[in-house]
Length: 133
Image 1 (cartoon, helix red, strand yellow):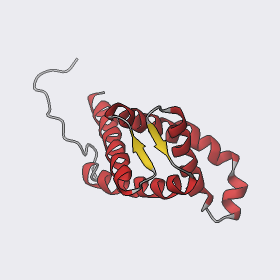
Image 2 (cartoon, one colour; image 1 turned 90 degrees about the vertical axis):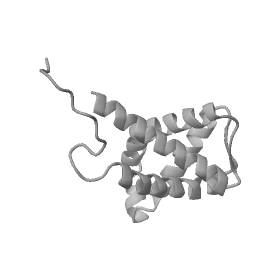
Image 3 (cartoon, rainbow, N blue to C red; image 1 turned 120 degrees about the horizontal axis):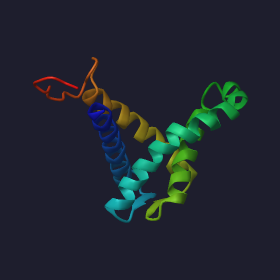
Image 4 (cartoon, rainbow, N blue to C red; image 1 turned 60 degrees about the vertical axis):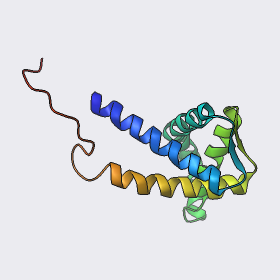
């Protein structure tokens, strides 16, 4: 259970870091506070885990016709959805969300490769001594 919590916090932190850097690179993205940044990262993870798969299933024909490029539009729409729900997180338009979602995806993947290396337990948690009940 501790491993699952550590993995969740690491993913949340990576997403927050990626959004924070996207705010510096893309002038159309802004956060009013650290709280809005962390809430946005948490809600973006939730949207990508729950809402995004439903939207992907509903748009399978369009995704197939576009050879999968419509998935980039879905990623941008998830960012726009989060920016509309979180006060203090602003995205100026669709194209900013489109390119920022590509940036956030690749940066999260790149940073995640270093943190979650191959192996059963990538984040090392010290083993406890004694009998486990």
